[in-house]
Image (cartoon, rainbow, N blue to C red; front, side, top):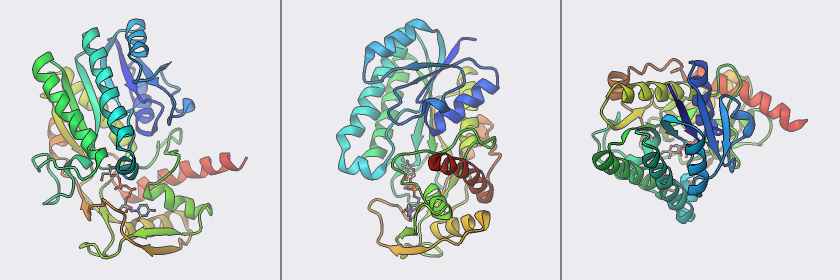
Length: 329
Ligand code: UFG
């Protein structure tokens, strides 16, 4: 068995997956430019500092190692920023990713597990969301992910690429062993922001919209544990290696939680009272996103191990406390 190239393995989900692959005895190389990732999170396997923007970096990496497969996590992922600075998103998430696909072609590497997103669906017409729904993203970020899925399908037809596009719902939680977690700069995601409030790092949490057509009026999301996402990558790799058909797979727990429910659960887990302020809607937020992950369960054999919201928040809190202590030193 040759190595697995983990592009973006110094980021939140890439690092968790890289650690899992290493734990399962696979040899890995993390390729990362450390623009948003953290070197300290990429401590399993080997590390190659390089940029997807530079085909020469990729050529050097593919020359140095032989790879059986690639997992690609490196992308910009702020929906709001993708609206105000689409060039940054199309450049990195699409154009630079083409460099990676072409480096794979040149080296004869056929298997790719790709980080896609539920953002490819836009505002869904039906819940839970199956892969058969129309793909109709409502922001440039989602469009970059859809474009990559279309490009991969064309590369599959023409060049024999085999790919799994894993459509994450809301990635959350942290490494159950406490070694990896979310450390975005700036942080925009709900759970780490509410934990900041619990840790006394912010005064209050703004709830973006309270008149959605949901049970309590606030947005509903399907939070999925980062360790379960990592597991799906390993299973997708095996699936491709065993001849599985290329395509998209939803990854979520099939259960939606409102913003207010998330805040309540943080209060329960941390024992701290969170000050809440109702605020206007955030542009581009669909009311509710809940996955049907039936295809991933059936085809990949994926069984999430940490489906409870309380466990997801507990692991995120354990990581958050360590991060906060480190920041205060
Ligand atoms: N929210 C608040 N207050 C905050 C932050 C978030 O009310 O301070 C709300 C949002 O409006 C949303 C929910 O909490 O309703 C979750 O927001 P996140 O920013 O944590 O996550 P998103 O659902 O916006 O984004 C996630 C991924 C994206 C992906 C998107 C698909 O992070 O990468 O799902 O819709 F594109």
